[in-house]
Image 1 (cartoon, helix red, strand yellow):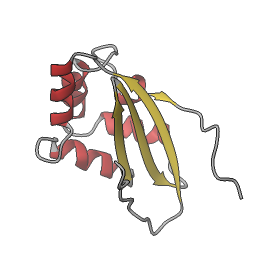
Image 2 (tube, rainbow, N blue to C red):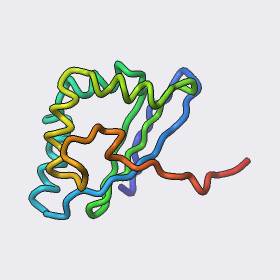
Image 3 (tube, rainbow, N blue to C red):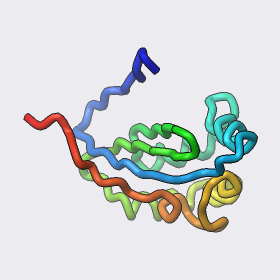
Length: 126
């Protein structure tokens, strides 16, 4: 992590959403959750669905059993409309049910029902 993480640049004005979720603190489940989010094991349909609803970039960070998701979208993005569309994307409901066993949430919850929006309290002001 001392090297930092590369960021994609967007050709359009963007805004960012940051969300939080707790997952199991069981080491075996944490390892499996990491695996299913890796490039080698992620479900292509989920990535395609995320892109189809207009999300430009999505990153998930883990510390202990706490996840932080960062979502970059076009400035005119409608979050609720996109989440409704995402729920109908191929295999999305199947994915949500699959990952629920790792997450501290209701088993049949949609993505936007699991993740808690976070409030930004600081930025490098001008």
